[in-house]
Amino acid sequence: MNALPADLVRTLADLLGDGWRTDPSERLTYGYDNSRTQAMPDAVALPRTREQVQALVRACRAHRVPVIARGRGTNTTGAAVPSAGGVVVSFERMNRILEIRPGDRCAIVEPGVLNGDLQRALREHGLFWPPDPTSADFSSIGGNLACNAGGPRAVKYGASRDNVLALVAVAGTGDTIRCGTATTKGSTGYDLQRLLVGSEGTLGLIVEATLKLAPLPAARRALRALYADVESAAAAVARLMAQPVAPSMLEFMDGDALRLARENMRRGSDASIDDSAINDSRTNSSTSDAVMTHAGALLMIEADGDADALPSAVAALRAAADGAGCLSVEPAADEAARERLWAARKALSPALRALAPGKINEDVVVPVSRIPELVAGVRALSSEVALPIVCFGHAGNGNLHVNLMYDPADADQSARAQAAMARVFTLAIALGGTLSGEHGIGAAKRDFMPQAVDAPTLAAMRAIKAAFDPDGILNPGKLLPP
Image 1 (spheres, rainbow, N blue to C red):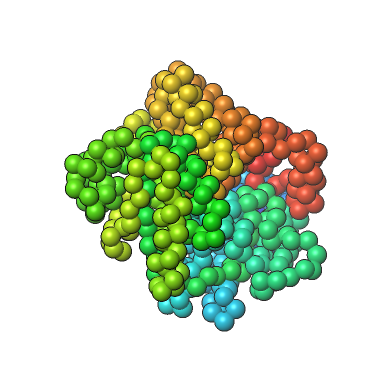
Image 2 (image 1 turned 90 degrees about the vertical axis):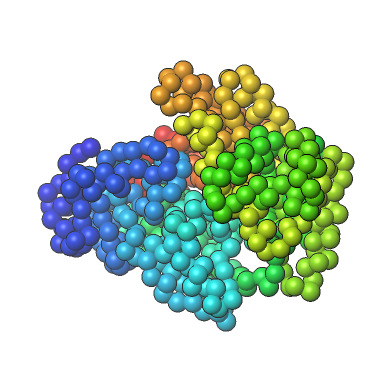
């Protein structure tokens, strides 16, 4: 960490008042994210207006001081960690929903608005914003946009990039740029708002977003399908995605994830969830246990839409889910059962801590048809390195969360875990996939970018970075390798 120039400190203290923090204990709390990595920033800024953000960036640029945008720190790749020191800009005070326009199906928000708060505000208008990461209740819209967050609904509605109409951002030059328009059609120059989404604060600091909204579905129905093996489940995913009815969610668990979720429910780690969420509530428990014991994979399928049309949609999805290797396809009996089913899926990630205290959670993507090869490769790797690796995730997008469990206090396990995850990236790329579906690159995957992106394309990315941020002050060391 380097001391900030005295005149910069005075300028920003005058600009931000109590939104300028230099006390070490306060700086420390803004130095980490959910990657469990940490670095001490030189200062923390909590602006309230876009004008303050613009003035801050201009002042930092004059002194070549790094500027790191921060939402709520739920990112898992170290993208919000101030690894080069500098000023962390937290948007927690820029948290206003500026306008909801039901007639235009859009909302205009500041970056610090929490996803969950926005959803609750939209509900009274019969609308929602589709991105729904697991962290929705405590992750910010700005953070969702920075990483192009998705979630289970992305299979039908798309990720953050597909649900933003316009952005206002402060570039590394200190200029405020306005991209896009509050319309669903537009062909006026480059599509800069989609470029900024997923750029992890390396091109600009988003200070306002116009989001594309969707009507809340009148009804939803869920199915739980069990398969003898991963290959059968993957074949079912291909069938489900090929027929006309788009599932609103399509989630996958491998056999290890399925057993872990079931054990976790039976241990009663959450009294509101029981193993009927995983077991088949329409069969007796012994039959259900027998089916579960032999299941090698599970698909959680959901359809949404008009209540009158939903039965035929569910029937189509059920028919597509059935096939070779399918052990059972059963609907959730009612809305409460549907909610338990999805609660069991969301409880799975925390339940992994029962296997080991440390977790490397990466979100590689492969074509849907290559899911069996990915899971088979991961299983072989797990045996080779003698560490548990559990796979689950968003099957309809080919986006699987590969969870490698280890003990961080054991140096040998840590080395094996890091080497194994590097091989997972190599495998995903070899299968025609890529490094990340929704978590982003940050620092954790930065050095693997040359495997996923060829040299001319990386050069184009660096040229774009130089145009937006000519002095390289915005989130240095993230996304693009040196």
